[in-house]
Image (cartoon, rainbow, N blue to C red; front, side, top):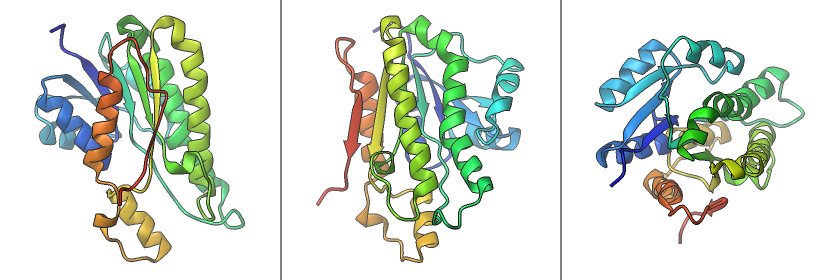
Length: 232
C-alpha cells in the first residue's frame, strides 16, 4: 500500500457527493471538502468526522483564488472531484442573464478556476480530475438550455484539460449520469410540476461506484467519458 490518497470534493453536502465522501472516508483516504461558508464547513465536518474543510463559494469563481490563498489547501492531491452543481429550468424565451450567469458560474467557471488553482498539486501526484457532468452535457432538451449549456461547456473544459495535462500524467474523466435520485432531482421535479418517485431514477450510490471505479483504475488506463443510464 502506498501513502494514503488525498481527495478534494465539491458538493459533498448531498446526493452523489455525499455518497462519494462517505465511501472515501470509510476506506481510510484523506478527504478535503469544499464548503460555501464557515457554517456549511462546520456542518460538513460534523457529518464527515476526520474530513478537512476548505471554504470557497462556487457561485463567485473570481473570489476562489483569494479564498484558497487565505487557507492551507493540501500540498498534494490525488483527485479533484467536481460534483457540485445548480439547476434552474426555463425556456430560452424566459431565462434572464442572472440565471444564465449563476448557472455558468457554478457549473462551469468555478470548476475551471478550482482546477486551475489546484493543478500544481494534481501534477505533483499525477492525480485525477473528475467532472460529474450530466446527460444534459450530451443532449439539450426543452427548458434545460442554461443547465445543458453549462454542462456542454464542462465537457469542453474536461476535453481540453485532458489534452493539456496528459504529458503531466493527470487523468481527466467526465461522468454523465442520467437522472439520479438526489435533492437536485426533487427540485427539478418540483419545477416541472411532476410527482417525484426516487425509485424510478439512478441511485446516487451507483454513480458513486462509477466515479470510484474511474479514480481506482490502474495507471495504464484512463476512463475519458462514462455515461450512466437508469436501468430497467
